[in-house]
Each structure stands twice: as C-alpha cells, then as structure tokens.
Image 1: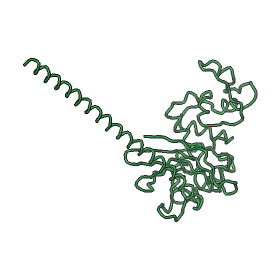
Image 2: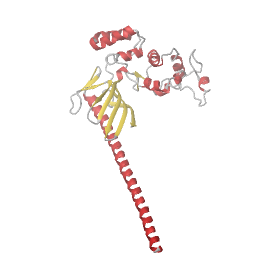
Image 3: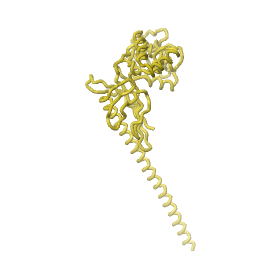
Image 4: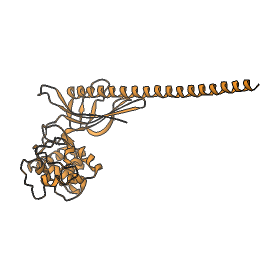
Amino acid sequence: MQKSGFALAMVLWISAILMASTIYLLGMYKKSVNNAFILNDKLQAELLCDTSIERLKFYALTGKFQGGGITNHLKNFPKKLSLKNQLQKIDNNISFKLNAGGQMFSIYSSNLSILDNLVKSYTHDTRNYIDPYMDWLDLDSSNLLNGAENGYYFIFTKAYKPSNRGVIQHPEELFLLKNFKDINKSIKKEIISNFHFVNAGGMNVEAISPENIRKYMKINDFEFLQLVQWYEKDFLKYKTFLKMHMKRNQLEGANETATKIIDGEIIVTYNKARVGKRVNLFFRTSYKRPYITYKNQLSYD
C-alpha cells in the first residue's frame, strides 16, 4: 500500500513537472512568435519608409517647386505636398512632415548676423556667439575679445581644441563652442531644426515664413504682425519687405530662386511598428545626379 502511494506521488510529481515545462515552453514559443511578428512589422515599416523616400524624390523631380510646396499630378499622391512643416497624411501608413530648405539656414553659411539672431531667438540672452564661432574656425591662436582658443577648451575634463577647418561640419559641432556649449539640451534640438546641410544657394524669399524671419532678423512686434498680415493677404508686399532687407545685407544670400531643398521626416506605421526617417534632399538638374541625399537617419518607436 505504501509502495503504491509512493508510486502515485512520483507519477503526480513528474506530471506536474511536465505540465510546468509544457506551460513554460508554450510561453516561450508565444513570446518568440510575438517577437517575430514585431520584427517583421519593423522591417516592413522600414522598407515602406525607404520606398516612400524614393517616391518623394520622384514626386519632387517631376513636380514644380512653388512657394510653400510642390505640385504634381501623380496617382496615389496629393496634388500638392506642403513644405511648411505640417504633418501631411499620404495614405493609411505614410505621413510626411517636410520643410522647404529655402527658409532654413545652411550650416555652411558665413552670415554670422543671422546665426547670432537665430541662437538668441531661443536663448534670449546677450552673450556673444560670433567671436567664439570665428575663433573656432580661424587658423590663428589669438582669441577675439569674447572668443576662445586652445587655452579655454583645454581646461575641461575631456579637453579638446578648435577645429580650425574654416567651416562647421555639423550643427552638433556648434555646441562644443564657448557660450554655445552652455545652451539647454532641449533648446539645442530646436536650434538644430533650423539648419540644412546643403552648400548651395541662399534662402528663398518665396519660402521664408514670418516666424523664421523673426529668428533671422531683429524686427519688433509691430513689424512681425505686419509681416504675418502681408504673408497671408498681400504676398507682394511681404516679398518687397524682404528684398529691402536683402539689400541691407540683413538677409545676405537670400533670393527669389527656388532652392529645391527638402528637409523633414517620413513617418510610417505598420501594424504596431512605427518608423521615422529624417531626410535632407537637394534637387538640382545641373548636377550629374538629379538629387543628393545629405541626411538619412533612422529612428524606431
């Protein structure tokens, strides 16, 4: 009787172990299958994102750049793509949020007045940003009144020295400079969003919004409100105002030629996956290549 009870206990114990193992294996299998579906969704979303970028390139190459957008009559695409940083749904999976590069500031520009105004429009301080910028790029070792050379940068725990390359390579590089490096991280992202990477052409008066003009130039509240009114109701007066400041070199390099630069984000959702790609595209038919991709960065949610 005791042997029968012991045998039954062993059977029950082994059955319990087998059942627990089965449940564990089923859980692992379910998790693996779920992970496979998630990975597949992300891959499909990434492929769809890449395809959307190619579609955007073709749309821009065959379309017409006009103030604030691109017009085209391709099937399965809007008749006009906005270039005013507005989220625009292309279909159930794809959305574009694009900027006209013509209203953005080239990282290679030498217009330090605009750079200074741009930074101060976010920081609201009175510090000098031009002298550190010039010292960072020049070849000599003597610093300007409010600038900085090797001696300033060598005091940090992770010491470094000015690039002396004559040009900034990337907006992130700006924040290695004296005064720039103290700017709040969230503000840095806002400042960087105003730059494009194309070393060709100036800003386009057809594309610059009043909000951006306020970042680039010193204008008072009355002038800003007047610009907003003209921008919406009398664009000719708006352009005349900008041209006047172009002559005064406050908008040095600006012109009426469409720069054909697109900066923005392609956002794709596929089931539970979401992929975003930031792109900076430059379209010029005079080049051997019809377009150049300056920036193409992938991000997952």
